[in-house]
Image (cartoon, rainbow, N blue to C red):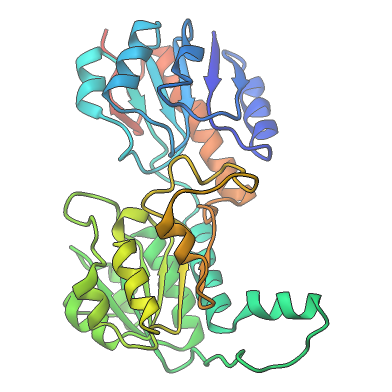
Length: 334
């Protein structure tokens, strides 16, 4: 049977097609459109679909999928906050995700954002294109000897911490459980308030849950140093963007690097360059010279995407064979 894959990027398509061809049991049809209420009719007649993290898998879409004959959803991401798992269970839909891929891809990109805003790389590159070689306004800071605060010290947070340790930074961490690998590097686990107040660089590596929604809100932002650098390469909903914009308008923060945005669905991964973007918050955010916004690309390396595709193919094969793999969120209803 053919798998219908929604939201496939041009770089991903040959990797997906090759992986399914090598697996041999399933064909694949790749679409560059995302799964929404408008596009869900395309899935009719396909028992298995594959989706990206920005797909709409709420109750209405899930019911439409089930009515059209879909029985299995293979999401190509670790996050699954876009899926109504209870409704999927009610409908008898099998749901699987990718529980692991290269943590280095995200950790390295988080540091790319931090260093880019610290050393004003985007502004410098724009200037030199215009043959303006002045250094005015490009003054950065050494990372060595400064303090980094890491919220979430799982696999990605640990990889981020190892890079910070290589820079020679003081390491502060916060998580529900301490990571021995991080403490071995010299990380000191502290309460969130101390981390926010003491850190020169703050990086978010926690999942988006009801308890972490707007983890970085107006009160937290006011606790941070005026010259702190904030990086979010995890989930957009961790940051209250309106509150962040208000602080930026007041002239605060050395820099902010965001690879995710809480209202990114319907924007990120799409070309909106010829349209009027009605999101006033995002429009204001990208105007600040000390802010760098990228379009959810931290995971986007050949290594990580290859692992994501391989896991997705395994999830589909497990479903076809009636196996309950480690990536299953809602098991097959037989």
